[in-house]
Image (cartoon, rainbow, N blue to C red; front, side, top):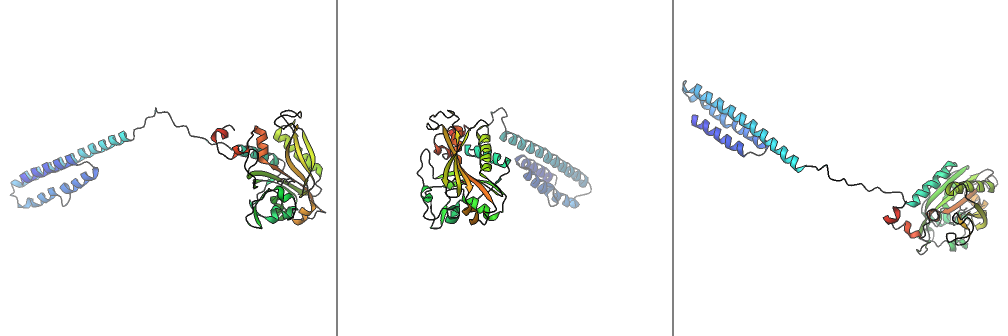
Length: 339
Ligand code: DAH
């Protein structure tokens, strides 16, 4: 029995020395010291021993038990230490390495100027309105006093989806949608994408952006239109901007005008930027046509209003002296980084 105990001790020593994981140590603890373990098995046979042998073997068995217990603790500590060392090695972090600077995006020039324009109009009590880009013939043309045979349709080369549905060629249909839904007083601007089947070149794109404006209330006059637009242009281009109203024609406004600002480059002398004109056209506007008001269920005998429409790309090209509209859509970082 003494020999069996010695053998258990040396088997345990060998097994513990080989163990590499804390789970293996736990298994060995059960195998040698557990209720059904090897050492317990020996102790169960103590009854067969003579009274003289019993205390000697008993003492030896206790020594073996405590030796195995100590060895288990030692091995466990060693294994945990080497696991920690391995982890520290594999997770080593060199804090002296230079960092990677995150790339920040920037606002697109169209968004920069659009946000500015929105701010100016919001400051004058306007709200932002929205409308669909896929429109019906009625909202894009008919309700705006552009019937089927009207020549204005030719100037807005339209992408038709079918006879009745099209990609809006202007933001003006939003006027109609707003007036149908809301009774005056109305003060909105509506920025958004518009589409025309123009070939892409330095000054034309089949997709571009417009900003529509609409004011309807009792007693709105052309003086309100002029005052609002002068204020807007001076806020956008500077207090010393010179503004000019030129008679024009739009089917949905009567009377209509185009608004020019004096060329800030040559101060009206004529230069390359204004193509020798001395003036730069900024937007179209006018008093909302009585037919358009009544098409939307607003009584033109009681209410009047003005409307305006401008191309965002043009405004931004003038602001930053950009000479090719395609730059806006190409996502070339070398271009975009400049704003
Ligand atoms: N919708 C016109 C266009 O695309 C621009 C415009 C002119 C809008 C005058 C208006 C306006 O609301 O009153 O050419």
